[in-house]
Image (cartoon, rainbow, N blue to C red; front, side):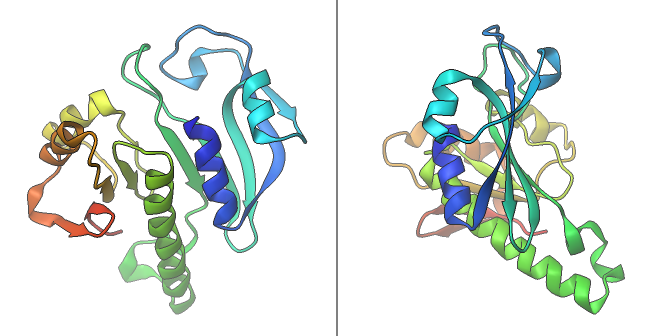
Length: 196
């Protein structure tokens, strides 16, 4: 399951599970986690057992340097769509416009952004994601909403990563076609676009 693989990647990146989890008892499809009743629980068992016993909406983790980290399911445009995963971290120095950052905020912003980018690539590859994105205070579009978000020029993530997939080239091409081609670059693991 993608949630467990992403959680594992977060732990590889230095995060530890806080024991805080948000779950729902509902098996009904939903677009947003606000559409279903939620319970916050404390959990101390294995990730696989947690996911087998509960329908997990969010998992709390902690990073020694970056603080609280949340792994959660993101909203979708349609109820029957697969929910993307979302990792949320306090923006720190990235929360300030680049021109207004103090020297310390600039260093913090660089460190956080490098960590976020490496986590983006690692989590995308580990979960076999169709694509991944990173940004500061942005809405992550689901697969069905991606083309519309680009066409409408709505606020979207500033960095994209599309893994170099050999088994689903059509999906890669569809995602790449929705992104501005002028700033796509190819790396050994896939295509990346943008910066903070």
